[in-house]
Length: 409
Image (cartoon, rainbow, N blue to C red; front, side):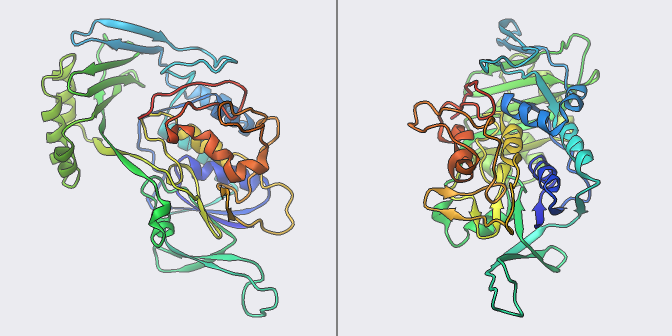
């Protein structure tokens, strides 16, 4: 098949990796002029670790991992209330803490995936998909396509024809907006009323390699993590002052910084240091957390993948893992291009009818009354099982037999 992928984050290069291994012709467009290597620390959980192992990239990920030792919850004076050390390996039971055995900076993960695909995938930077149009094939029509196609209109005004369009362009996906424009009832996304800010700060001699988390009064949270000898990251989250934050997010970065500085004033702990770093930060980013949900993930020859399709929000902390899992699979033996169809049971996301090895999907979905599933079922509803976090339930591992819980809203 001739496939075009929009987005060179985690999901896009990951799905490209598997498609080219099956012999498909893959083009990946990215609207930024180069790889988007911004972003802070991400972790890989045990199902995603298995996927990366099957990609042959696990040692590379391990070599570039962040040496975080665990998580410490502190009080307003910095006293340690709870210390949770990192497990060096994921256990068979799936038990894991805040700090994964595989913590890595987002830019490093993206670079690893890019390096693994750049020789066989055509990357086109500074280009995006503005619109698409599904075209039905007709074997009896000598002028038109013999099989179903999708025509994409690119940001430079050109139009190109493909067998499949995969939208891996994030939460704010333009392709997703196009897909749901005429059927908004299928888009069940919601803003969570949680406002977050991220930026880096200089490291001091006493900053040990632990994630430190502080739960302040008035529904505020501050967290620091350390990925370099001289630099770390700050995460601020608030579930208050909704209107103030929303007004600031519609304005410039200075307004957003002012809003977070005002709300976090008087929080305690390392307030002075953190707010000073906020003022000076050149990489400050703020947003309201969004949970992506929908009843369908495809439309004709167009499929959504990763955050553009399913995103439990950064609170769940599994976005990169879910992107890798969603991308993993093989098209299977082909008798011509496989249709990315939406049936009564739901969408066929990610690979049009993606199939995973049965040993990976030999799981029992306890509490849902579902039997063990294989890759054919995954195409209809299995991916929804991967992202039960979206429904606010306990997530059970899809790859491997373990399970873990994540805090969700």
